[in-house]
Length: 347
Ligand code: FE
Image (cartoon, rainbow, N blue to C red; front, side, top):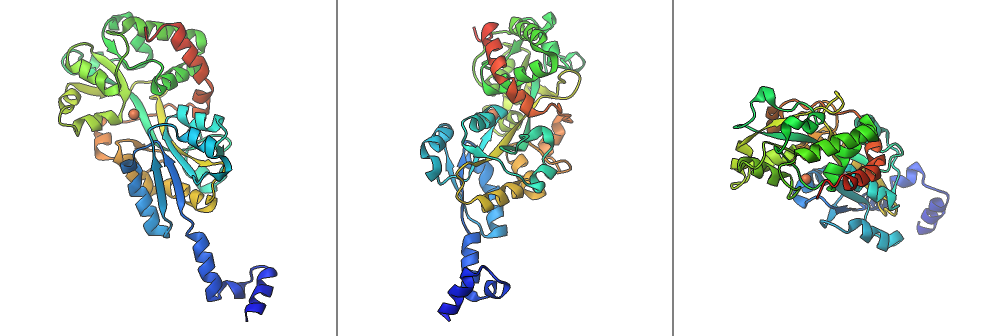
């Protein structure tokens, strides 16, 4: 019996063999190959979807979380890395991973069918999973709704002199916004804009996105730039609730299109030992159920069209995203960073 089995096995898998109990068990073991994730995103944001995936498929997902150094770790581990997928936020960090050579292309009709072209890399090295809008927070007390800025361009208008707060210009979120400005308007106009914005700042760039809203609450400035999900995070935080209550959100346009958006995303590692299941997980995350769960977990937007948005997100107003391809934003990052230094944005 054993002899016959190995002979047949050597001849390749046949339908008869696949139905034998021993081989079926082996097959199941292969399909149960666990997926290993390196994540810059906090576990509470991604674990619920991984649990749903495991319930669906029986495939276990192991997560290693670190706030930094995971790409470097992948570089060091090389071909021996246990990691299959890397999860991170921002086009800057996704394209850094790609530039480091630790990713590989995924061709999947399911992924390219679900995720808009603007939010995945042309050659399939990374895919966006959620959208995050970079919006304006505007003082309820000091700026009537009809006088609020309607575009990022308007933030360079001298009428806002001494009234705007932002975080460091070199933070990835601000670099991406400046890159989008360059992509839409060209370098010269983008430089004028950045100098104008710098001239309107109420204080030297400092703190994170939420610290700018706090500054509005405390009367230091009237308008700030920040990611949309911090609104939800502040409303859930006892100390920060009052900061959020002092502002209203505005979805500005860039070059008369829509609001600048960034993504959180995923990439398959170059050495992925469990490639098949890893791609299965990527596809699961582009499905309606996971899309809704993932976006709601952090007040972000689903990236797949037609997936319902969370209640708080809907109440903030309608997001009409800029359709600029994020590949273009990535391509302008170096130029943007140079510009930010040249105009002395952080000085
Ligand atoms: Fe953030």
